[in-house]
Image 1 (cartoon, rainbow, N blue to C red):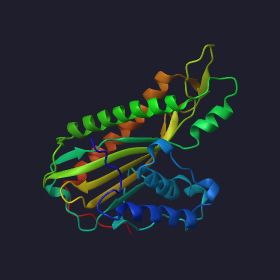
Image 2: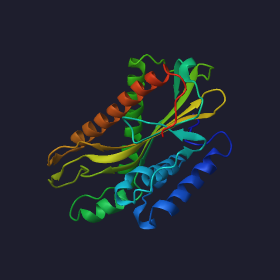
Image 3: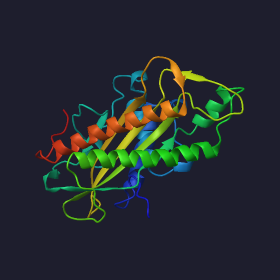
Image 4: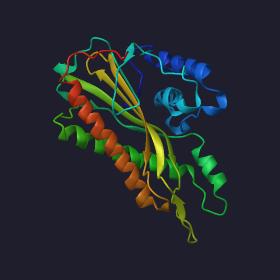
Length: 268
């Protein structure tokens, strides 16, 4: 199956996405403060995560003037209550869409996460490339299943073929960091943290027939914002799945409102 990534069509969309991310890095962020995602998932999700980190993740450390752009790849920023950033194509009327094509999901770890984690845990089992790859594969399956379930519960059929009434939806989670990974070791050890980790959600919506970009949303999330506790692989997965489910619930409800409303108005 061919994997669709953000910005791969129409022609030139991916290039403009890269240019936007680079321009934002130069304007808003010092080179040392901008993190990149895992090499093994270096699709255009990388550039979405790059831009998302610029726009949202380090906003608190930037001057008030360092705000996200009002326009992004022909989309305009609109008000959003439940996500950090929401962009829609001006004049787009979503009311004719009744079904969703859900593209293969993507997961990307923060590029430096494995190296930094291994360096910070002397005496504990090291995290391998195989551990990261296995986590990515498992998370992609969980993410897709959760979004399929929430979209279906809200009344959107998941279809496989492009049609006039079908939206193509891409869901990716980038900049994944696990605070206290539970890696199997010969000895007994326990790891503790307040959260399971954090990540950035990127959703992109296109017309399924023309490929025209209609919308993009970005949101940062924390998995398991609880008291300090013993972390296991079971508790880590439970917290990340809860974060995925909250994102899916918000997305499905947002689509429901969008598909019942007239064309959106840009944020003032």
